[in-house]
Image 1 (cartoon, chains in turn cyan, red):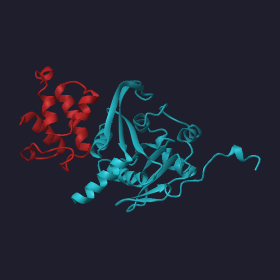
Image 2 (cartoon, one colour; image 1 turned 135 degrees about the vertical axis):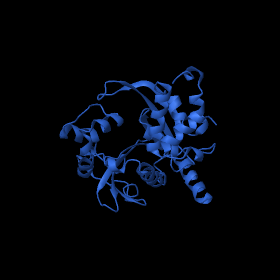
Image 3 (cartoon, helix red, strand yellow; image 1 turned 30 degrees about the vertical axis):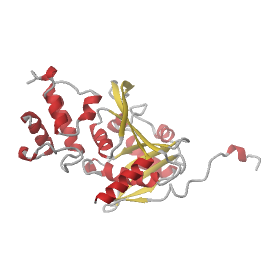
Image 4 (cartoon, one colour; image 1 turned 180 degrees about the vertical axis):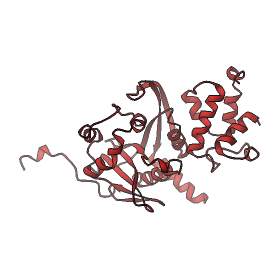
Length: 202
Length: 79
């Protein structure tokens, strides 16, 4: 009891940690150990680290555990993207939810055989559907390198609003170049309305 | 329609140029997926002999946008 002030962690939100199903994938909410396991392939993958805008071009296992943070079911979520057909994990989706209701997102499809197969759209739609139903989420946000053409495509395809871009805003530890980045947003209510409109139009 | 733009889009999307029209776009054409988009942007940069800036990159959503880039006066002499 006397030490309770040291532990400020809220219990995980029972709705937000529910598993999410899409047509081809199960999005499995990960605990700390699972999140480290599914993201470990990234820690030495320079292309992934560059496009995630990580600080270093390679991480030790310990550094990686620290960099990934601790998924808590309230402010940080890692979803393993598991193929229903093959059963393996092909990537991971991350959501960081701040106290103002902004959910910042990132996704990595580390299984390159799945690139170009609309995984981003399907997984991100599942995530947006799920998180927008929570009162805790007001807005979705994503920041990508302007030369990450596939991500730019995917945000545009999903109807995200480009709220701006900044020139030479980030220096890649991989390429050593200064890179431009794009900022995208979508209000939760706009996503819900968009999905409702899509359902009516079908 | 600008033939160069049509060819660039058709090649990137692996489509017959005859199938490219004013309605062809990121939101309307199934063949315009993320990989096709990637190919198209790179093809445009090769054509224009320069890297596109963020405003140009984000504008590439349909045929008219590609035409506007190809027709840009500063790059009209690009081979």
